[in-house]
Image (cartoon, rainbow, N blue to C red; front, side):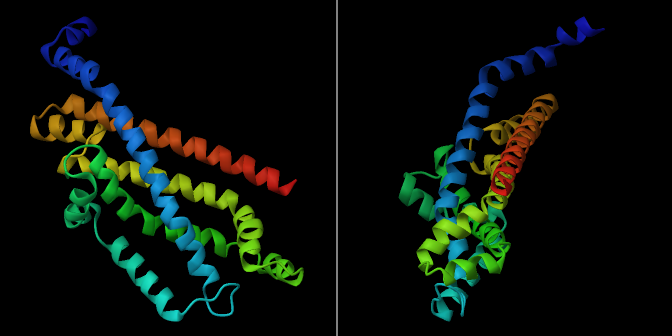
Length: 234
C-alpha cells in the first residue's frame, strides 16, 4: 500500500514540485521575514521609546500634538488588514522598488504593516521597567539619553526579545498572505497550487513548513529571552 502511494501520479507530481520550488521558497520566506523585521525595528524601536519618554513629566517630554499624531498613525495602520494595506501602498512600493510583484517588493508593505505593531510592543516593554530604577538614574545626574541607552533599553532586553519573537512570527504570517498579491515564498506555493490548482497535498506541505518555521523561531526567541533574563538577574 505504501509503495502504491509513492508511485501514484499525485505523489510524483507533488514530489517534483517540492524538489523544484520548496527550497527556494523557504529561503525567500526566511530572508523576507528577517529583513522586514529588522527594518520594522529600526523604525518601531525609537518610536516605541518616544511614546513613553516623550510623555508629560517624563524624562524627555515632547509636544502633546506629536504624541497624539504618532498614536493616531499607529492605531490607523494597525487597524488596516494586511492584504488591504498592501493594495493601498502599491504606489509607494512601485516608487521604491519599481514594481509591486515579486518577493523583494513585499518588504515595503511588510515594514509599513509591522513597524506600528513593533512600536506598541516596544512601548509595552519600556513601561514594564520599575520607575524607581529611572528615578535612581536621574538622582545620579544621568542625562535623558543616558537613561534611555544605559538604563531603559538594557533593563527591558528580555522583554524586547520576547516581543521581537512575537513580531517575527507575526511578520512570517504576513509573508504567507502576501502570496495572494504576487509575493513569493511558501505562501505563494500554498495559494498557487493549493487554491488555484487544487493540489491539496502541496498546500498541506507548505502549511506544515510554515508552522515548523514559526515553532523554530518561537523556540529560539524564548530561549534567548530566558538566558538574557538570567544574566541580568545575576
